[in-house]
Amino acid sequence: MNVNVNGKKVIITASSEGIGFGIARKLAKEGCRLVISSRNEEKLEKAVTSLKKYNPEVYGIVSDLSKLDTLDKLVEFSVEKFNSEIDALIFNTGNPPSEPSTFDEATIEDWSYSVNLYLLSAIKLTKLVIPYMVRKKSGRIIYLSSWTVKQPQSIFVLADVSRSPVLQLAKIISKDYGKFNITANVVLMGSFETEGAKRSLRRLAEKVGINFEELWEKEVVSRSPLKRTGDVEKELGSLITFLLSDYSSYITGSVIQIDGGTSDAL
Image (cartoon, rainbow, N blue to C red):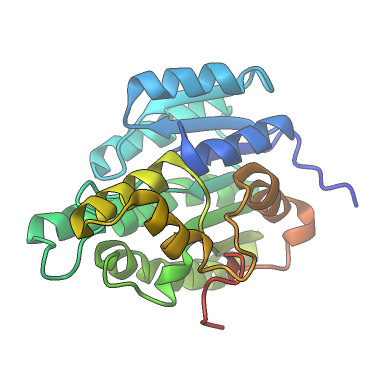
């Protein structure tokens, strides 16, 4: 089976490192034209330089998902680079600076930041890219989330509560825009060994007074029946590539888990 996504014009948010960057690298190798974003200009420039080794048509723009007014510029920049076409939005986020935190620990300010980051930015970006997909009568929207949305964890209360409505968003978009050959799906991720994941667990390890390596083994590696983390580019990136391809055209409104069997939820 030849999964061909060459030339697809794709926006990937929060993609200068970690999950977003790994997906961007896979798609660059597959020939996709990319706009990546990050709130950190230095990391963004480094990521663009690295990705251009695989595909010269990779562009970057500074954008902070927690600041909704920066998202218009992200899409305007993408439209300019893509000649007024957008084939796909891959919505990825970083983590709130206060996470991991419990309900007791999270402040209203933390909640406001989290809702902007995980939910309102997803809604706004969807509203901004949909018209271009409608005009072309095709499009892919992929929201990246976590297995914990189905099986909430107390220490990730901000993410799990703020992210969960995106499943309903994807379902509604799939129903309302299916007639334009636009699909919308949510990918629930398990654990991937990224610097962001390690930073979160280090904060938790310090908070509870446990050795980081011990906590990583207990809360990350051992949770999966496979007893390992996933490979961002090989496993997650390949799934995303498939979802961007013509082979996935009948998959929409779906929640797809790639978590190594970590979640007990069906």
